[in-house]
Length: 399
Ligand SMILES: [Zn+2]
Image 1: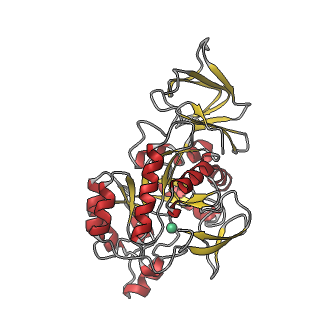
Image 2: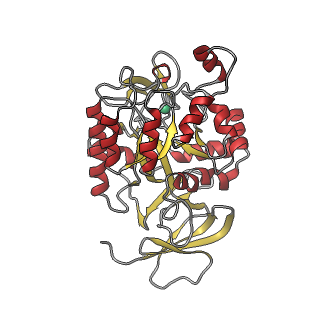
Image 3: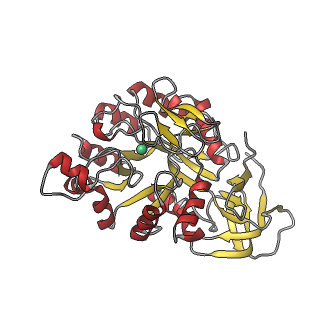
């Protein structure tokens, strides 16, 4: 255990859940925030000068596949740690490594590796594993997108019940129209998971049934999801509403956007933010292993059986056309929202910290600069690039 310590971050603008506070400070003791604003400096404090930047909560990323050459589906503790360190550099302090489609064995190996990393973790090492996002393989075969093809399947209790029993899965995805989807949502929500529908061509009716079974979220809004046109192709006329209309019209539903500036234009980002607001919309990175790597060809998913894509340095591109997830960290997503929408900095940060923390049930511990919470804090410069990261009051020193 590190010794009891007192830490003060000051000389910057605090990003609070509802406002900015200029020229203010945060006081932390023993890894927790004890005061924000202005207070007498304790004699024993280590002082961190924010250099006129922003002092903000660490990000919470619940949909992320890799970084620095590693994909969580590589299935080793080394790969999991490398990818997490890549995201810690960009301000993420709570992360949910996310599965892709893959074999049963590959998914078991990924869960084993994440459990190992969580067991050996200490503050300052890298972002904490706040859980796993069980994302692939329960995708609709017509919406597999950039994921490894041929590994998507219907939900099978023999596979998902042992996985859910581990207790590490906090977010659980399934395409709502698949046979067995409702049983999957019921089992996952009974264990406290956020249940989400993604890589799906579901109709409103199927979404409503799923909602009754525990569904509350949709993965990467506008991407790999149904539209009224795709529903007409699948189910004929009269036309029916799709996942998009269901989310917008249902107050209990939340969703997420990939705000890398490549997947969604400013109009779609603005529209989604305007319709849903900062408490039903979150930012994710959905990033692949090419984050902070040279341009070139990589695999989405397992290094041996993954789906090849090209990173051009701004986004992943499938060899057959279409996008293959992002190559950006979360600070980039915040910059895009601030640049492209009316959200503003306070709400953009909230959508990358407090709102996702609430959706997965960890908001009493993380997600905002409030006394009593863990001292997961970052310093961003005025251009919103992450400069320094503290996890439970211990600075992340990098790779
Ligand atoms: Zn996806």
